[in-house]
Length: 374
Image (cartoon, rainbow, N blue to C red; front, side, top):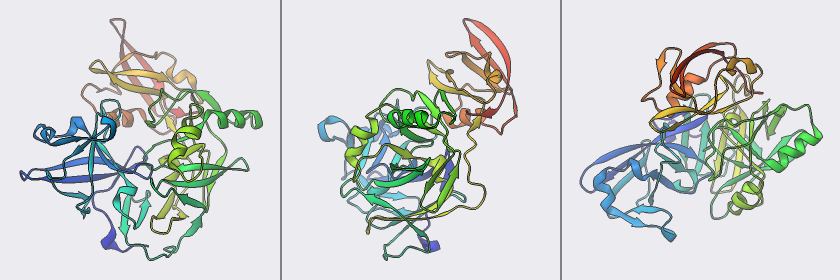
């Protein structure tokens, strides 16, 4: 295990993701802190353009093909993740964030592979991240079959599901694990009893429409870590096989996200290209419980974006897509951020809910009860 001095400060667990502060000091003496999620499936430090102070926008340089902007290196005086200073050569990228970070508790992405060639250790049970030099050791953990892409440094791991090993991206930047529709369809042919329903959950910003289905296999095993009944969200065919696989050492068919990764302690050695792990203490299961709706911010308010299948569909029978949420259990949702709304809608199975929504000019009150997704 890394020493206490290698531990980053101010790490929190939000929506199954590890949140860290990025502190940026610029030449005029201004210091700005950005709320970032730590992403092993990203290769850069990227913040939303909307979060930049106005004075900084005069110091943006166009990135490759105009897709991204770079905050000019002669304007940035220093960068630090938590309390760890980053090398002066580290670039800070900016991207329009309206479709990525709007209303969420994050302003950017801290790509793990942008932080050097050392060791990154992730702990979810007591949220912590360690950055330490590589000594080639396993840190007292068990080896996990993995490979790191030589350029992107994205980690590819093997996950055993239903007696079959599947190549997956190790993706701490997503909250709910994902699987290609092609594999999910195969699961349903081979295991028709596995719970599956239409709907989506979690955040997986991969530049496409919402996922089409939720699937819950009995378990997933990654080396020494086994998680019971993990929730997977399907992604369109080819999204992984033809898209993301360009950035992994070999093709992948899905991604293991925070709802699975939070049940382990993970040591990623970027210098040696090795991954080590051990199970986290406590039960290793993914309850995936909530009221069964998904909210999205649009037109100045929070709307019901989708109604998810749960084990008790009657709890949400009176809610409809595009209903405007007014309050949840007496708490007005106007002005709340995405993670605050998510917290309102997440609860242990059986907890009662009271909603006020606006539909077609009328205000409607309805009751609900939290249930497990599929």
